[in-house]
Length: 131
Image 1 (tube, rainbow, N blue to C red):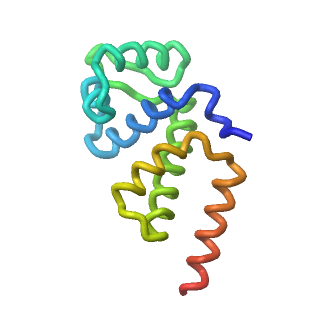
Image 2: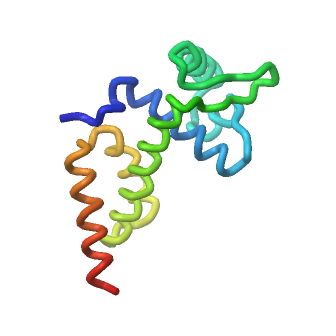
Image 3: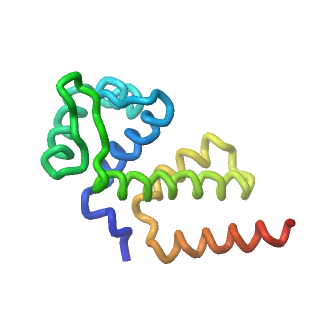
């Protein structure tokens, strides 16, 4: 069974995730920043922003600053949490941090909730044993 947020597509999830990362880092989000962060063209970002705005995941003001709506934030938070937890898990297994980050990005969208929850439970259980 696939991740529930998968209905909007991996690309849209990546855009939403990038927005909360950029907001944390810069305090604001603009299309140009998303293009640089994701390594995509500005026209690609414009098309994605149009779709995300039409579907109610983001809002954009006249100055071009982007805000993730509550609907978008639900998905962005879920994907970003998965990304961070999976990256930390892989690093704890001894994987190089850059590789762990890249691998987490590859699987964060496709991993079932069941498997992700089992990984989290394992991390929690392992952490309690070390104390």
